[in-house]
Amino acid sequence: MTTPSVQRSGPASSRTTAPAGAAVPAPSGPDPRLTSAVMADYRGCFGCGEEAAGGLRLRRTGVDDGAVTAEFDVRAELQGAPGLAHGGVLATAMDEVLGTAAWLLGKRYVTGRLETDYLAPVPVGSTVHLRAWCTGVDGRKAYLEGEGRVGGPDGPVAVRAAALFVEVPEEHFTRERVKHGHSTKERAN
Ligand SMILES: CCCCCCCCCC(=O)SCCNC(=O)CCNC(=O)[C@H](O)C(C)(C)COP(=O)(O)OP(=O)(O)OC[C@H]1O[C@@H](n2cnc3c(N)ncnc32)[C@H](O)[C@@H]1OP(=O)(O)O
Image (tube, rainbow, N blue to C red; front, side, top):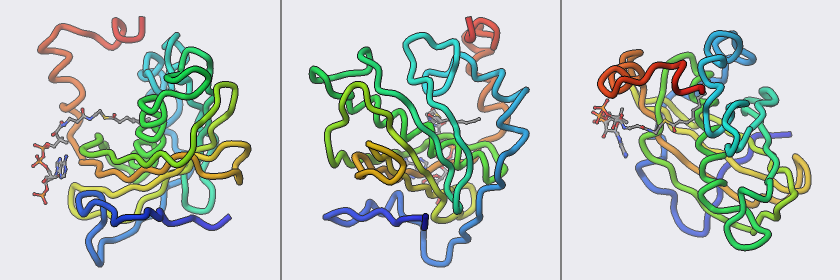
């Protein structure tokens, strides 16, 4: 499958569009930073954590043709309108897969801006198949785009997203926890 480009009826926000000439690095592929030590720290993550009882429990499935792939099941507790996935849940799923694609660039990134287009309702009971890819890196800023399909990896696109991620130092993840007295262990429990 070729990596699709995001198409909207209107122009993408300039804040999530890579500047002309920005380098477009490929994800590094299955990476040890996304296994063992790092992922152990993410057990409580609302997007992907196994121990986040009410979370999405998104599963990362690999890297395909320059895009990170993942999927999650729309359980009944993730609905908004009766029988349909909540829009915030879909935005969270996009944030998670876009963030994964950003981390596979080899540095630590957080979401600075996330834009989401909802193209079709997503029924409870369906599996959303997600893809995310980098469109450019400019200094600390990484530009990512992604999509979610329903009915299979080649099914119709139900949600699209574009985001700006900003590279941060390791201290970004520790200073607020220290300030508020939370340890990683407490977060996971
Ligand atoms: C295994 C791992 C997988 C992980 C997956 C995780 C997925 C989930 C990811 C998340 O949800 S992360 C959590 C949500 N995000 C945050 O909590 C971030 C909160 N915001 C911040 O900490 C700071 O605002 C931020 C680090 C984003 C930026 O602050 P800084 O002081 O470090 O940088 P600065 O404000 O100077 O911005 C750097 C550049 O980014 C630009 N920028 C930052 N935020 C922007 C924004 N919102 N829109 C447009 N541009 C923005 C900013 O203009 C500037 O551009 P220039 O270098 O060209 O001047």
